[in-house]
Image 1 (cartoon, rainbow, N blue to C red):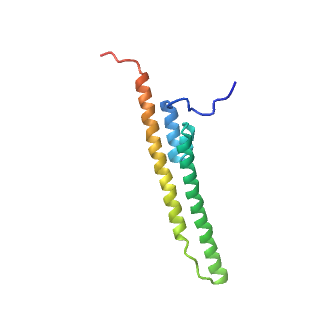
Image 2 (cartoon, helix red, strand yellow):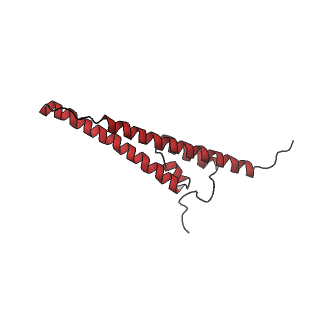
Length: 122
C-alpha cells in the first residue's frame, strides 16, 4: 500500500493547518506550505528563504575575512554590509510570503470545518 506523503488531498484540517503555520513562521518559510501540499508556492518560498539565508551567511564570512585581513595584513576592509542587508530583506520577503500562505491555510481549514459541522439547533 503506498504511503501518503502529504495532505494534498484537499484543504488541511485545522490541526494540520496549525502545524503547517507553525513550521512556516517559526522554522523555515516554505516548509509548512510544502507540508500542506502547496508545492509551487512552498518551493518558491523555500528558495527565496534559502537564498536570503545564504546571502546573510556570505556577509558573515566576508566580514570575518575583512577583520582577519585588517588584523594580519593591515588591509582596508571592503564594504560588505549590502550583502547582509539584501539577504535579510530577501529572507523577510520569504517570511511574509509564507505568512500570507499561512493565513490562507487557516482560513481554508476553518471554512472546511464550518462546512462539515453539524447544523446547530436553536
